[in-house]
Length: 271
Ligand SMILES: Nc1ncnc2c1ncn2[C@@H]1O[C@H](COP(=O)(O)OP(=O)(O)OP(=O)(O)O)[C@@H](O)[C@H]1O
Ligand SMILES: [Mg+2]
Image (tube, rainbow, N blue to C red; front, side, top):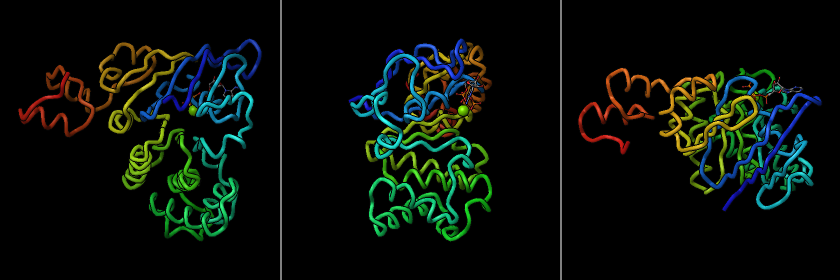
């Protein structure tokens, strides 16, 4: 079933400067990475899905409801967006209050909201920071607080705008875990990413934005095998893919494990 339907959507912040130029996309439960160079329109696109902006043309349906006619508040229980910049999202004085705010705001009672907030904080590894002021945390931790705030609302659709920026090893693992958990629950996860390695490893579909249009939309192996298209869109192939090619392999590897398996001669990927 399509969770999100986008039909011929255009958007301009200022008249005459179209940032999105007729986007048509359908999203089912397949986890999807959105990639594209700076200014390609990725954040604008997900703000439209979330109802924070309204298309200048075209239609968007979220779980069968017309987003054009709904406010961001009305869409909040169904679709959660973790902002690119955590300072745009954080506004409470403790981490726990910050993470409880979302569930409370969509009608959860205080006890239930606290339970969901504590579970979400545990998932991202921030249980110890629950009573701290989120503004005092490091950028990587602030981003994880924002992830937890949205996870605690248990939306059907989760969108992460650049979750891996500034993350260390533990932060990356926490984000991987959140993505995996949503996938297991049959929910739609979308991630905007500059990190091609992370996109290749964690998502089942990749959509490439370039100057306000979609220039590729396929499974990761297909998209990351198209080096010239990626170059035109200002993007690189994942490091592991490049390493495989430089070792003379023809396949497009998406993970270290795939490359190692191929090098050991124990089998190869199906491409
Ligand atoms: N609030 C705004 N007012 C005017 N123009 C804007 C605004 N926000 C974004 N833009 C412009 O819209 C275009 C698309 O921006 P957007 O933030 O959607 O790109 P992006 O793909 O998310 O880029 P990045 O990878 O840098 O986050 C850019 O040219 C940007 O300058
Ligand atoms: Mg952006």
